[in-house]
Length: 256
Image (cartoon, rainbow, N blue to C red; front, side, top):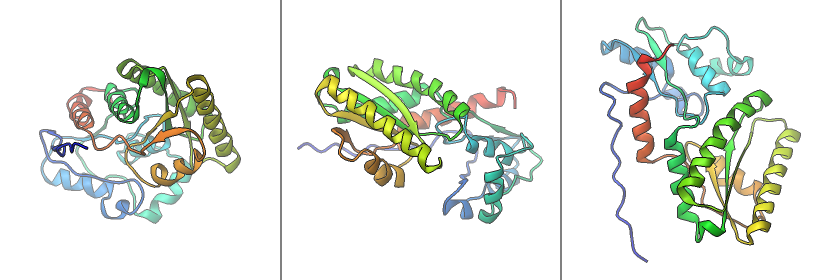
């Protein structure tokens, strides 16, 4: 077996200082949004561009970022209840803050997913591909997510040549009976793909990074199905470095 040389990663060239903040998890306590904004202001920046590493702009977490940036006045009550316990609070700075869109239907996301899928396929033109996202609970948000993700799926199909490409979303935050129905729907779609192709279905998660969902939750959800799955997430990948750079360049010219 030949060994590939390790890919060299480079930091995003933003043209200015960079700080990282987390919305949840252990990182939220040590890398706070408000602290990051204040640190950048202390460096005499003229404005701050926030690039959300999120799959969709149609999510509660995207709205949470806009609230933290002072761009909206209201926030999902469930998030508002939990944020004080994690020490997450709004930025208190004088410089303007702009928030870029999330990945949505960006070409870069389709390119990364196409690469992840191709790495698992033996014969794409004879196989099916299923893309699965960690989606929202709200039905209206789900429709907006799927509108974008279907365009992403079409790009992946065009770049890879899979016989069939499907996409759907399952939310871990949904009520148990709602989540169970979503998992049932995903399993039925994959089973239909396998029946049509008579080959194992390639499954790729649409998630920013590896974690519990990629390593165990999805594995359990899809247990027993004839699939090929590695759990590789969108990051790390140079296409997303380029996407971050583009967001920093383009966001200042967008409306708040």
